[in-house]
Each structure stands twice: as structure tokens, then as C-alpha cells.
Length: 369
Image 1 (cartoon, rainbow, N blue to C red):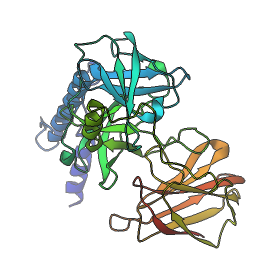
Image 2 (cartoon, one colour):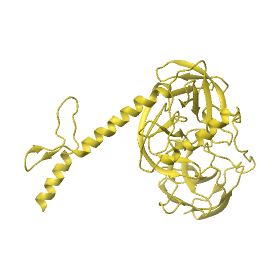
Image 3 (cartoon, one colour):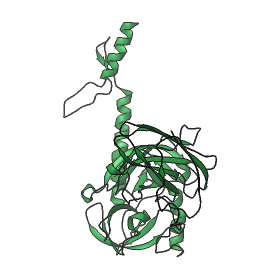
Image 4 (tube, rainbow, N blue to C red):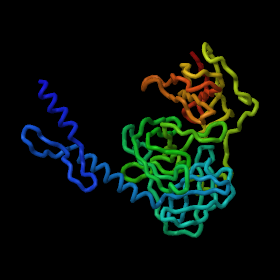
């Protein structure tokens, strides 16, 4: 038995090696017969690699870089041959029209701001001037997206010279109520507005990014995209002239949350409620902020429990401008949120309680231990 286990272990180490730098390397080796065995895992890997290359080559010509007069960048994708481009509204909502565009081949152009999604969803459209034969992306059926399927993102993260960066991952979760897709393809600031694609090169979502209360982007290990289900109604609204040319956001109540409540670091239970008109993140989900003083090495446990909403928690350390911890579900069957974290240093920390789905309202309890 030990010899058999040893053989399996060594064979496992050999399986999956590929040709590197022009040198032939065995992909799987039968120790007993001293013969090379084709590896199924390598074949599957090669097939996925071919899919990634095909998706990028097929879709990237339709992805554009957007540069605003405010000096910010974002991404977008062409949805018609005459140059209609979909992006996030937060990419262009503070900009003057027109905005500058860079096509995949480096060609520069200008685009006029056409419309913003009329229900305040984080979508906008711009139109590249004087075009009639541009490549454009097809849409997938919204009902075709499945947890576990491969997904691909194209956009311009962080800087203009990262134009048309390609990443890939899988769908991690579907949030049906708000039409959000959670996935793990890497996206950062600048990817906002770029397409999330399936293995056919069809658009299944529009990548978006969360922005904190200071206006700085969060860089987290979780990526979100607005489902394609929002795109067709938006295009119909544009066609019928029912989409506004100024971004419409839910009215924010400036008297609520004007001062971040200071909490004791432990032993706190807060009952609160999300109501229409409160502050929202770019996906139009409501949020509250709480502040507490923490100590280096201190362990904190924060829970957000509710029977009405799908809770979401962030623990932010503003000094380092990063998220310390985040959680939206305790388990597949428990949509309450819970995070446990050890604080890196003394200082002020921010707890962000959030409704994962846009527009959710209801009571919740925030417990700090």
C-alpha cells in the first residue's frame, strides 16, 4: 500500500508539466512501464487556454478606453456598428461631453455622452462620432449565467498604458434580485464599464467598482458586474428617447450619517434600518458607516443580521486606504454577514454595513464583539 501511494504521489508531481522555453518536458510518466501517458488534465488546460485566446481576439477590438476631462479613466464596449458604447455612469457622470476615446488599435476619437440609465442603475451610453462600421459585442441571455462558469474581463485597470488588459475567473455567486454577478476575474479602478464575457465572447455583465466615502476605489478580492439583464431595457430607453442625459441618482438624505458614529470597539449592539433616499454605493445599494478606535493586534468580530435584507460588511482602515475584511454571506444558506479580523495597528477603523442588492430596505442588527 505504501509503495502504491508513493507511486501515485510521484506520478501526481509529474502530471501537468508542459513544454517550457522550447524544452520538451514529460506531462505524465508511468513508473511501472516507463512509458509516456497522455495527460487529460493537460489537454483540458490547453483547451481552456485556446478559449481564452479566442475570446480575447474576438472581443478586444470592441473594448474601448474612456478618458474624461477630469483626468479619470474607465472602460467601455461597443454595442452597435455606428459606435454606441456602454459604460458605467460613475465613469462619466461628472465629465463634460464629449469624452476622449481610444480604440483597441490605439486610434483616438471623441464620443458624445448620450444617456444615463433612467432608474439610477450604474450604466451610461456614449456615441463615438462619425462611425458606421465598428466591431461590436453580442449579448448573452441573462438566464444563461451559471455559478462556476468561466468568465473573462477586458478593460484598462489603473493606468492608460494598461489598455485592454485581459483577466479571467469564474462566477462565484448570482444575486438575482439586483442583477449583480459576483466573480473572481481580477478588476481594479479603470476596469469600470468594461465587459464581463462568457466563453463565446458574449457580454454577460458590465464590470463595476465600489467607491468609498472619500471617493477612492476599494481594491478587493471580490469583483462585481451588473448583469446583462439591465442592458436591453436601457438600450430600448435610449432608442425611445426616455433615458436622461444627466445621471440620476437616488436623493441622498444629507442629515443622516453626516457624522460617522463613534462606537466602542466591543460589546456593541446597534439596531438600524436602511430606507429609501439614503447614501448609496455605485451599484445603488444603501450603506451606513460606523467608526471605532482600534488597537494593534486586537481581534474584532462583527456581525450583521437581518431577516429583511442580504447584508454585506466591510472593515476599512482609512490610514492604509484598504479593506481589512469583507463578507456578504456566512454560508450558502445564511445570507447574514460576519467578519473576524486582527487589526494591523492603532488607529481609527470604519465599518461599512451595506445591502448587497440595490434598493433593498429593512432593519438589521450590527453586533461588535
